Length: 190
Length: 190
DNA sequence: TGTAGCATGTAAGCCGTTACATGATTGA
DNA sequence: TCAATCATGTAACGGCTTACATGCTACA
Picture 1 (spheres, rainbow over the protein chains, first blue to last red):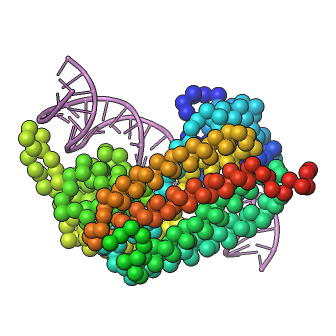
Picture 2 (spheres, rainbow over the protein chains, first blue to last red):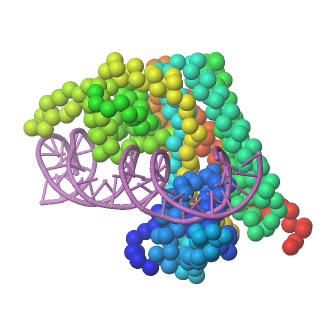
Picture 3 (cartoon, protein in one colour):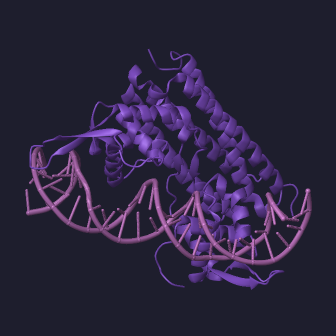
């Protein structure tokens, strides 16, 4: 319950994951993040999951319970406290979302096409489409795993958004690749 | 020319900006970044621009020239050295681009819709569409400023990609908002 | 007179990652 | 017995931001 400085958004993301579970260990939270947060936020490293969990516990937003394991080492499982749920609700209600941050290595390459040359740019774009296809499959599997469960309606919507997003990227990349092949086309010009 | 550890990608982005100019001051680089890098990478803070420029100069990838100002304080202008150009080319040629990193506050809110409630989610999505419209206008102005200059063909392509990207986001958000209004398979019922 | 823009930096600090250390269990 | 997975952490460090400090010019 120390400090009243603002939490980083990733803390709220973790709080949000806890809101989907009655209890979860750090390890489980990391696994869950890999199937969810990873696609639209970050999936924090294990070490960060643990330190965030400690911060949340320090502030009384989460509570830890020691579960003795089969060996000598035990597992700490966390759950959302009423204060944690209230703080998450407050944040969702009051804080205005920033514009997304995008770090797009392929676009950076395209931007530097005058140095890289068109052949390399084409290769980069092709590789990106490849990566996107893989992502779409991953998301499709995750979406299928969610099913119709009304409890998971919003995660399902996000998964659908993600697939649409990636498909849009593929279309956009193809359009750029097309413009690279025939630099004269497209509206407005000449 | 100290150190041979890998440079962060932002250094290459700065190197790339320098490749578009014969010379530029830190201040000019920041302004240029605000019109370019900002949309697909980051626009580094002024303080970071200066420290990156120093790093590039230390490594011999950029060269600084002191230009006396009207007052006592002078301006340092940087230019790409042959070694800098070679290193940028090597990076573009050899380094494989990572998948983009997206930190999407609106998607995070949607993901937590079960806590935020549908009314708040609708407001968040509306606000996001608003932001997107603003971004599209910004990019349109920038695209118009680039014009037909073949020297700036690739930045032009990136600006077009950006506009398409944002329009795609608007479509996707509208689709999600639609699914929120009519939960579709409402027949089943618990 | 004061504020906005041009211009250059230093210092402090947080977020997040990688590397490292440790220990238990399962199965090949 | 070796590797993989489960499981929990600490330490070090880098990237990037914010806050702060400074000085000059133009202009309202």
